[in-house]
Image 1: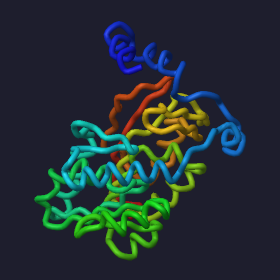
Image 2 (image 1 turned 30 degrees about the vertical axis):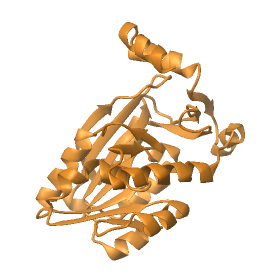
Image 3 (image 1 turned 180 degrees about the vertical axis):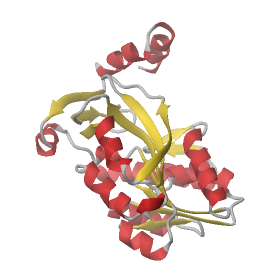
Image 4 (image 1 turned 90 degrees about the vertical axis):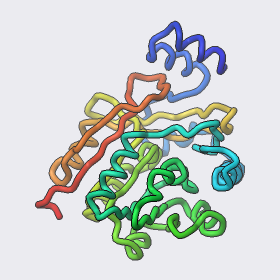
Length: 269
């Protein structure tokens, strides 16, 4: 499969590569409800996935491998420079301090990805809000003076004055993404960073089932392609868009991986 993808990249457009990828894995369907899509999902071994994440996250922490994402080990760090630029810009505007809420941040994927560039900050609190079983493991094995784990937004914000939120590759996997977005927006946090999120250029969202490549883990689960216009409308009256950007990724339907940096409007503070 990997060799096929390499050959395809040389000969075909990104869209055609995505269509070929979709013959094996990727996103399929257009479901009317989360419940209807969930019935078609094959499920996954939650404990096995968590064990894989723990194992590779520990290897990153120990310096044995440079990077881990979605339980997969990488031989080099894959940076998101728009995210890193946003983090450094925000910290500079806050007296070289960063109190970040990383919603759905696993066991510190983005933290370890960016920490070498943030060590110079006078204060850094990277706060991950995750599912309870991730938080349990995070508190036991990964928490340190900079990295913290919480079970909810409110718990996190009761401990730290958060000045930025990171939503990386998470919104599309929530049953009610706009409810969570509204909860975050209502907290009036100064900056919101959205990274690696799937969008379609139409008025309505599209609900699909994503089949994960078996070399990662055997699973299929519900995944939204959000209407970009609908998504932006949720921010429009309360946040200004500083910049947006495209993210590379193989997608087998007509859509985009995108990211955004939003700043709160003065009148909404």
